[in-house]
Image 1 (cartoon, helix red, strand yellow):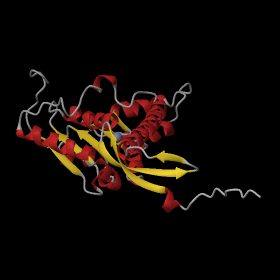
Image 2 (cartoon, protein in one colour):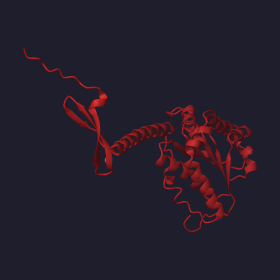
Image 3 (cartoon, protein in one colour):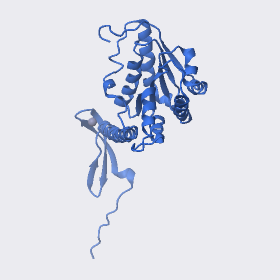
Image 4 (cartoon, protein in one colour):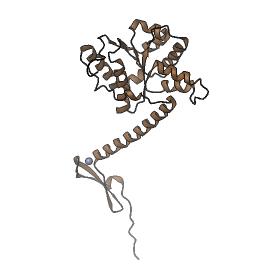
Length: 268
Ligand SMILES: [Zn+2]
């Protein structure tokens, strides 16, 4: 009688061995060889594996970020950053004096530690004379997040926000006031420019809109960057005290722009 040889799969320990191997890109690595049913399965370079995983993660993240941004701009009915500002970056901000270098450093740091900022919703105020590059830096922070991270960021002037909301009162408008507010509360960063630009007493409509946005973001612990030509002590009057209180929560960063206007100078 012929006895049949029983093929049994040995336990894991006995059928795995490690051998030296070489990756063209990353050099020597320990290759795991697993014997299964007479076949040798060899593991690949761990570094190649890590890079491939990372690339897949980035691709997944960026397609998700792209969709989020697309949905957001649909809600806004416009681009996240107005077209004429899309080229303004931290790199092409011209810092010629100490104040500008400091302001640039503050803004650079703010986006660098943005993950931390997101945990506390810490706000920033760029404040001071017109023509000193506040808008450039504000836009640049939003652009930096959009270009180099999967964050969402929106830049708007107060005037554009009020106009967009007024437009929703037209029956033909497909967006509602709630859509506009949600699209300003939703992004990871909102840069709100030209606060108090009229220098007149703000209307109730302006005050309640500003509060709805700033308070909405505060409740979600999302940071806001506010830009204004006013002096720091005039902000209360322009935005309303409750609004400025919300900005102050978590330690508002105030960046003063105190040098003379650079407008009209070469390269600005
Ligand atoms: Zn490799």
